[in-house]
Length: 411
Image 1 (cartoon, rainbow, N blue to C red):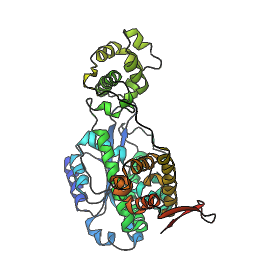
Image 2 (cartoon, helix red, strand yellow; image 1 turned 90 degrees about the vertical axis):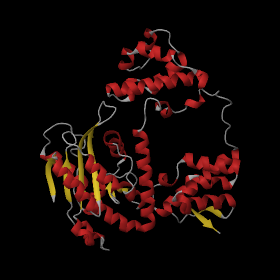
Image 3 (cartoon, one colour; image 1 turned 135 degrees about the vertical axis):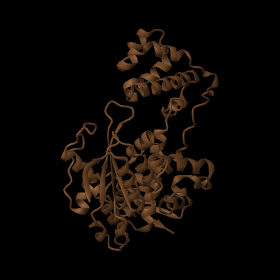
Image 4 (cartoon, helix red, strand yellow; image 1 turned 90 degrees about the horizontal axis):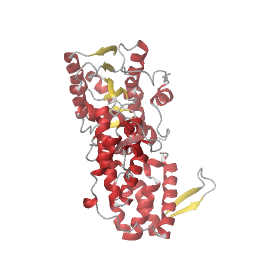
């Protein structure tokens, strides 16, 4: 049964949490307001589940039978209620379905203390592993597989306003109404092996979300790209500015870029302006940074390079053969992705191929055993092909009859 009223009472929230815990499948989605904020406001938590008495049907071999089940669903109002019990029920559930939940997970970690969700499975990933498209939206997926007519008319709505309209509530309910059916249909397409791959990648999404939520002022410098290539004194300046920026962003609840853009942060760390006027005159500097120019000068004055390791010699470029290898490894990954009908990025990025090639070149093929291409679910699909090609037992050859024009020959 779909309930369109907002749940705020503690007793009802406890009932929902208990029902989720008993169900064979739970699903969730969030609506939030993120404009001009460092941490979005959590505006709505939607959950759905199948009644425990329908468990036998959920386990039925026919996914269409499962898809026909109308789930229970509730819309919870986090702005006027404590949602901790429901978040705890989701965190402990063995099968939690969500669609593209990275931002949702990070927000639950920041706002509700979420630290784990081992049962998580992402239907967007399921679609990608089923060859239905990379990063496909929920409405498109449901419309294609279930014949629904979901739209995006409320996608950019003001979820923080109360009361919510009937159209907003219906849109929010639809975000969880079809997740159990999509899971059932996609799981049948994937089979146990690929479903295991999706579970592993879903946990990686969770880990990335939790890491993003765990950034503190003291660790903010670790988010700066290219820091280690700078002179120690510049590194020290960038570190203290990153800490100041994070603290200021938290205090004002504004996005980092609205406090101080990365480009300006590095310019300040390099050039060390001597007065507030020079800070304010920096091209493109944010109004907030202009207002806090004196603070920025004081922070830069505390930068100490003594604890920063010397930059040392620039990293040595990969050898010519490692560069050639990486191009071939990336081509092999694309061939395998075509054969398996999954998105290439799920197998390997260019950086992954370059790292694998360089490791094999400099340390030997055995040293690649700990890399993702061999140590994760990718091992049988990709790692064996990469190691086989480098060992001379796998070849990539032209094949005009194949869609990609090439094929792999093994043995």
